[in-house]
Image 1: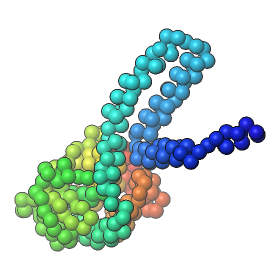
Image 2: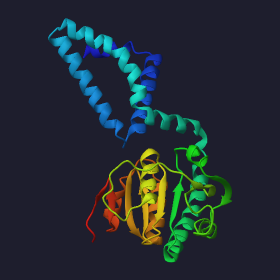
Image 3: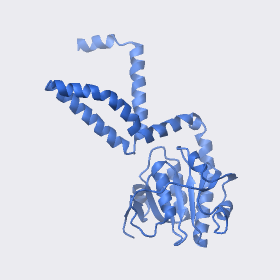
Image 4: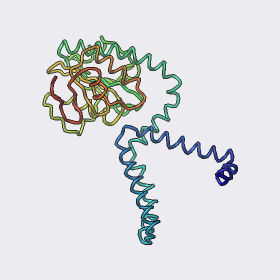
Length: 284
């Protein structure tokens, strides 16, 4: 007990500040990679390093210790390459440092846009017109905006109906929405590499899955062939939605800070068919 008190008596304010800064940085890093594949990779790296240090210290393996010591610099170079998507997302969030201050205002604007998007999807479904609508969240979509035709228009169901009318020049592509503004139409999105078994899912659905795998965007899709309304987020897709369900899910996803398991959240509230990484659930 006296030894513990002696150690505590030697702790200064700068030591507490130093430990606190390191803890904050580690916490932020873990929050950034939470819900991604990087968390499993990081866990594997930590276990591997722990076992290597344990073996080299207990068994006193000279050659193995030399190998571990020389591998550390290479590991420091490899980590930024391995975690490139997560680092890019972190830098994008830091670039939007004022986002937390004006978040209530941005969420109010997004709520107005969500109502219009859900209404437009219902009307497009009834008319038999296809649509692909992307709602930007924290990850910037400027690279994809540049592939389309730039617009600066208030989101409304009437404008979305006009854009996706088959005879218009902008109907073939994605509409990208930032808060309550349509920033681009006819934008090109990356196609998903995952194997999708449902033959009814075409290019629009693969594009929706693709952008949701690479960013935290939320994507609403209306099938031109079947009129089915679907929603993609975090590499998952749910189908057979109506206007009310679509609006409810969009609001929940947009206001969620942490990555949300879309399929699990939906199954707790309403039974809808979902597609997760190419596997199709049975129809209810």
